[in-house]
Amino acid sequence: MATAVTAIAIIFWACIGLLLYTHVGYVGLLAVLTRIGVGEREMTRPELGELPSVSVIVAAYAEQSVIADRVANLLELDYPRERLEVIVACDGSPDETAQRARAAGADVVLELPRGGKIRAQDAAVERSRGEIVAFTDANAAWERVALERLVAPFADPRVGYVCGEVHLVNERGTNQEGLYWRYELALRALESRMRSVTGGNGAIYATRRESYLVVDPIMGHDLSFPFNMVKRGWLAVFAPDAHSSEKMVPSIEGEFARKRRMMSHTWPIVIRGGMLSPRGYGARYAFMIVSHRVLRYVSPFLHLIAFVANLVLLGQGWVYVVTLAAQVAVLLAALLASALPARPLLIARYYVLTTLSLVAGLWDWLHRGTPAGWEPAEGTR
Image 1 (cartoon, rainbow, N blue to C red):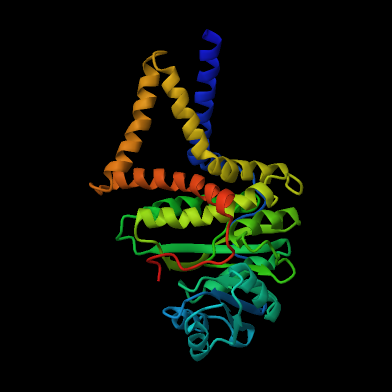
Image 2 (image 1 turned 90 degrees about the vertical axis):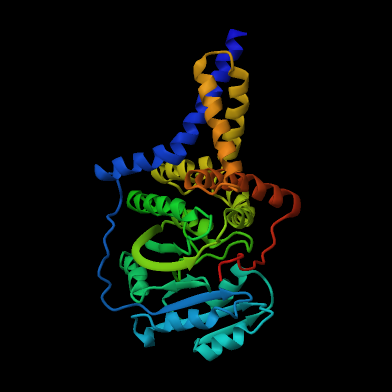
């Protein structure tokens, strides 16, 4: 009996330790390592010389309300017009997205059959003429100097992928994604200095034409590009001075639905898309993938195991009463937040629901499959 209790205690503390490490300890460890000089590159903006030609691609589905503003924003960038190509790839849009994109001045508008965002992007890359292909969302807005700063890291011939910084706007709702995203950006900057980022974003990123990858249509670029670039010998880096803004989902419940959809695309990448294979990783990047991605995605299961183990360990000391009370308090705070939207309670609700979204996305993929098509998230236009 004593041996069994000891084993359960080891499992409990291992789960708690892994959760604390992936959410708090990892970023602290990276901060220390980069501060003492462990890393492959500094976060500096190299001089490009002559600016490369760039094709900026907007994959769009049912975006007639925002596409004209998106095209206008891109045409107003501080970038030589003769070196800038704006392409809108309409993925079977049922509305006037294509017509409004043309009227706004897009250089190329592709009207494609419905095949999903990835295939629309692939088609646009085939049609593009730029040395660099950059990508953005239809509801994003770039600062005037964003493109020049986004392509600057390509002055380093080792760089194959660059993602910029996204600022989420419209934080008047209940969603606490802005708090998490600031943490994620800090972590991304540290990963970029260490080796390469482990994830990107859809609002502002770019690749060399020769480094662009054609991936499974249900596997988004945000997650599949960085680690695959590393496997092919490229660096995947973060450009913190290349700024974009994007309207976020206003409610925590809406964020849960968005992340659930995202995770139905993420799990195929993790399980069968090559992320878990160490082939092509150096030790440093493999450590980052496990710390940031794998442990983060299995965190719901770590929570469940820790909770069950904690129940079994009641009666083995006051510390297990405290740890169980802490877990129950977080769950109660998440429940109360819908009736009492105080900031601490909202943060608890955000954490619980976004953690649950990881499991919900896995369930959706395993039981229904993941469609290649997509629709704009509610409240983001």
